[in-house]
Amino acid sequence: MKKIILIMVMILLPVQGNALEFDVWKTGEAKNKVIDTAKREKIELNTHAKVVRGGGVASNEIHYSSSLFKEEAKVSLVFTKKSNVLYGIIIDWRDLETTERGEALYEKIENTLGEKYIKDEEVAGKGSIRNNKEIFKDCTTTTTKYKGGISSTLFRCHEKRFVSVRYIDNKLEQQNVFEEKNAVKERNGDSGKF
Image (cartoon, rainbow, N blue to C red; front, side, top):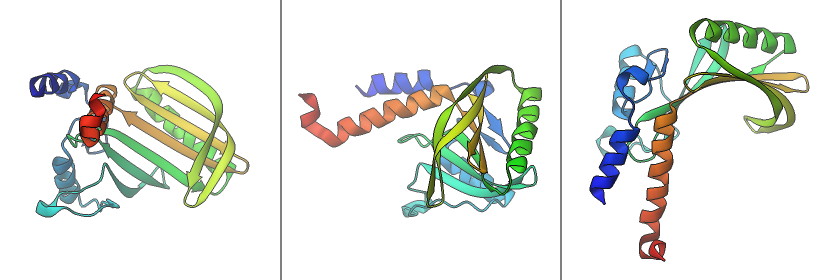
């Protein structure tokens, strides 16, 4: 069983050349390496989790604030459940005070991503978004997807605008799903055999 898991992990791990990159982060990096990079780059991480013995972090997400395109953004670094490998980088701009600021920011992001990545599709839809303690429902959304696991979404919620950019390494996301399923099986013990 352990050999099968090891083989599956090796198959699902991307080669370094396929890693998605944002700022100083690359998908596929171990959580400890990400934390070391943050210290070296003087990025103050907010883990929302207890620090475990040995200085590790017991959370699957780490956050920090950054100014991007002259707007305050929250950057979330998302790790696989068990192997603690970075598989997602999510950048959220919230509380854009005017609709014009939200639309202008989305356009800047689209131009920047469009210069670097191949556009795959644009999808209009509806959605909801949480901002601090408020939930905005019945938002209209425009999502642009790029080849390689990158997408940007503009949420239009009445007079407010929110923008989100997601870098998701699809192979590592599959690995995370696999790890989560195995964690459930391990928790269930013998009852999972029936």
